[in-house]
Length: 366
Image 1 (cartoon, rainbow, N blue to C red):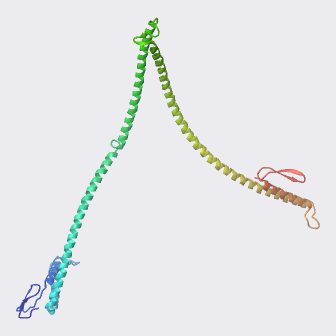
Image 2 (cartoon, rainbow, N blue to C red):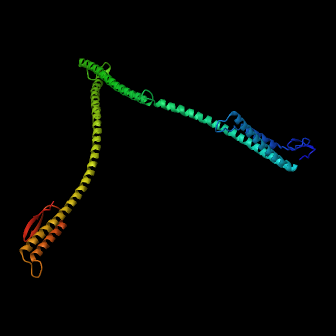
């Protein structure tokens, strides 16, 4: 730090003149901070009040606000200058070096981040171009697929229709070719027969000749054999045509019968399952009926026994010792024995019971 009355320079290169009566030491970092603060103040908008004051009041308030901020800034600068002035030159130089080193580090970091940002931007651009090309290719494929499927007049339905028409035309051509070949065979047979008849006529005309004599350079035995073979060939052809038609008819009938057989098998399986279910239901109902018949029989026997016992007790005087008559005991035992026998035997319907040497039919009450 320079003393009053001396002239020197600080480490940042700022000249200090002591003749002016003001000692000012402004490092480069402080200058940058001041410039940053000035730029921020210039970029900050002025605050608007809620009301709508007059322009003069607004101007006065703005100037007073600027004056206050300027005074605060001057006070801060003076405080900073006083602090810096109280420091030694070595401390200031060390602070400046630290600030410059930090600035250098920040600039290096800033350059690195800018380089990374550029690389990321380039990678993003490359990916974007790649994705756009993929999207374009996928759109083309989608358009091709849509055009291939298309509507009724274009696409697969039309191709299927054309394929069906082509197969139909081929079947028609095959039928026409088959018919034409049959016609040609018939015509050739007619020609062969006509020639054969001509040869036979010639043979008849030359009947006086020997059997081994040649007719038109052909032995007679060969002509007879050829005639016989031609007749057999015609017969076999007619038989093959008939057998083909019969085979086709029988094939169709076999297909129909197989379909009916499979249908009958399904019906049989369904009916068997229904029969099993009905048997189970029948057994259940039969058991329920037998249980109900047993309960009804017990109730009937108990009611009948109680009625007869009451009637007999009313008719006969009670025994002196208070015991039951022998006949009522016997009837009660017979009734219980009958019920037990019915429970063991099972089954509904009419049942017999013996009472006093008589047989009585007992039917369950519904």
